[in-house]
Amino acid sequence: MSLSTPADLGAAPRGFRGRILGLRPPEAGAVAPEELERRLIELGFVEGALVEILHQGLFGRDPIAVRLQSATIALRRREAAAILVEPLS
Image (cartoon, rainbow, N blue to C red):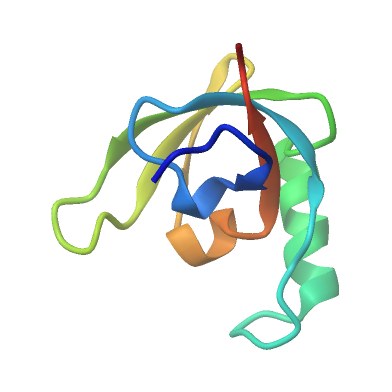
């Protein structure tokens, strides 16, 4: 999958580097959209932050390890799908 245009972080491959454009939590899920958005913001997933996918799990590519600024955070791909990103040039 090519990420030359804005997409969600959950669809990005290992090695992807980009900038966060915003959050778009799904309406249906294990966690209410407002709660997921609050959790992601508290972790630092805010507009303009730089992200990189460092690692992915062996089975189903889940979870993923994401470098956010200088921190490394593990996310499920379904949570990462709520994070809109654009690739760095």
